[in-house]
Length: 155
Image (tube, rainbow, N blue to C red; front, top):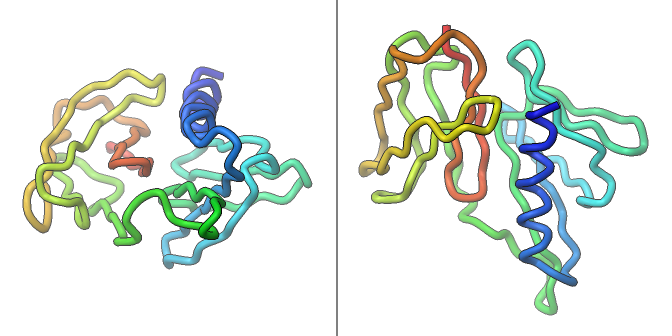
């Protein structure tokens, strides 16, 4: 329940910043397939057994999501709210160190527990950033990179 409240809070924060704009949520799968949903049609996003799943109000669901993007529909048409470059985490699951690719240099990478607690903020390096997660308990965690949320599993 805490996870749902955390994710709902993130979605509402983004939606609130866009005021009267129409917002779309884009779920990106591990093969870079993008599936678009109107934000108002999203029921919830669930993390279970190491998998992120988006459930729509129509009853359909999409599993295997690696990150979520938001778009707004303005006067100039739909525009992406963050860079389209892909951000990847490798290896996933991870035991001691993982590498984050595709983040602009000096951007901040926030590491969160599934309860929404900020555990660490890491400044991104050029090309790739190595993060030591050896001290983390086994489980599922989130990395916030800009407006994207990526999940990873600590073994």
